[in-house]
Image 1: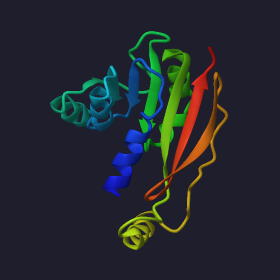
Image 2: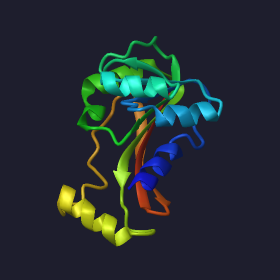
Image 3: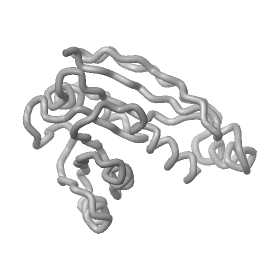
Length: 172
């Protein structure tokens, strides 16, 4: 699923508002690297010491912190992203912090996952997914109402199936 993972992660940058990008749970900084190659100022947040060190080796600007306590100024970023996050992404403390740092007309894009029914080795990926995660299909997930942000779940077809992206915007 590596190709789908990387391709879908990069899709979050397509058509995004200009300005500073903040990637929550940035891991080893791959999205930050892609954003920097596109000329964006990109900052990552990750609570893991090991992931921050790996991202730094990739040349990414990453701060070891929690999404529930962002060390950034109010309305300082135009795009907040999270790719394949855990349930923490829609917790009230995380959403409050995202709302606080997101500038007017900024966007919050969350790649929640997707289907993998197309492309080379699709049958093998589907089988492996069922072995690891079971047969329940969690997509599209139920989303909570998010204050201060208006948004929608978007299904975006790609060569692997469909990616599920929540796209929210802060009013200007």
